[in-house]
Length: 185
Image (cartoon, rainbow, N blue to C red; front, side):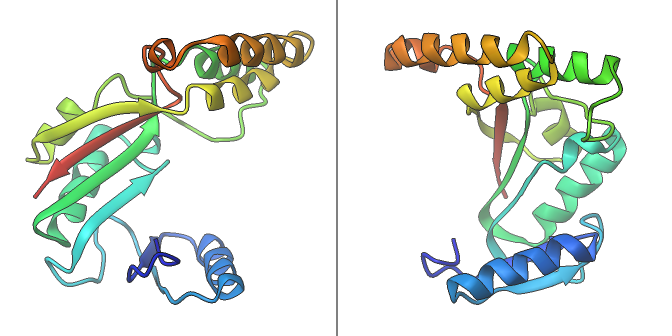
């Protein structure tokens, strides 16, 4: 977004991801603002942004914290702007298989993670109306099969070959690894 000319502000609770982001922005010659803060209490003015989004954040929190995060995202979004969240999709079978095996064998590196079937209740708890919801990255879900040692690599290759032969219409029917939820403020 910054490379396309947008003014971008990144917020993270931890300093290490912000340092990596600063470096990435510097390498690409783009400007950005980097704020270390809890997404539930951002030191940013109300209505500042046209678009506020997160990816890979909400699924690590309990429902009350998720609602607080979304309310805070809505607070910093201008009226008529969009709040977007991207989270693992509970209907993505390859993701669920890989996660199940990794948890079972103690190899899951992503901590407590609650994939979503829908954002509807989550957005409602934050007083936001879900405007649109769709999944993306069905083929990315195949990467989670790597957690199944003997079966994962060949199964992933079979899945990728199968995927490459599907029509675009058939691909759209498959649940993606990520579920996108969009609300307008």
